[in-house]
Image (cartoon, rainbow, N blue to C red; front, side):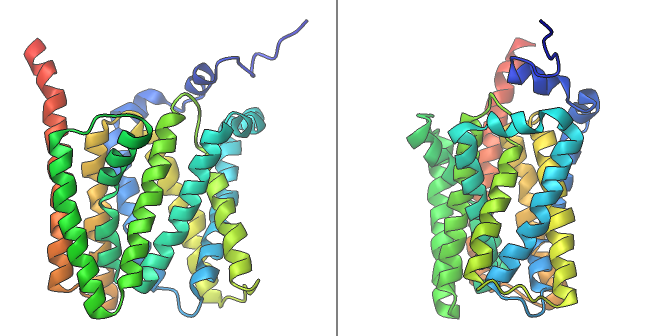
Length: 315
């Protein structure tokens, strides 16, 4: 009886075999992640470029283009294994997709109801929230450096929420915190599913955005040509590239290094909006944001030094 050799018994072995030029990817992993962070830093710019679409039309429109493009990329890369990719997700992959879908929804709501700077500075606390959730769900230990970083970040976030109260945008700041939590849950599910390919979870996340965005918008998708083009560029091209590049490069880079690299998004995002639309963050927001970014960067540097110490001692 013939056996289909293209349908292997081991998912890990299978997905390693279809890796596109792993030597190239490993060599340029850091620049690949840096490029993904640079691309995602334009999220605020793209959102502020929308002319007339409401919150839920944007949610629907972005995911409407992102989802089929990701599905096409998966088909191009995995061909005959596409159905198997979704079958092997399991409940972990579904949870991963739902978390990502909710994160993609709340990031748009957050940036629409507060400044881009406040939203992104709050989101930069994701690694610290992930550490807490990893302790709860994965029983991972929390280092002293992480405890200190969490305390500093909480002060920074509290400052930004207070700033939101004074500027009339507390809802946006709180939604940004919820978004950071959803992204952290997404990472937790990724860790639980590290024995399988989780790229299809991004398609699940896209379907979540579509299924929620369309009915909540009242099934009204009469966008202007300008807004339609923005949603296509943002969801179909930029976001798809970000997901693919990040997943491609992150497997070869330490988590602490990834945290440092992704700070590109949170520092440059407010800059693009300030230069293009004159949206200048308040001094209070900058202070709170500086505390959060410093906490994340400091923790990442400490983790990198600790991991490098055994290697240096062995040489």
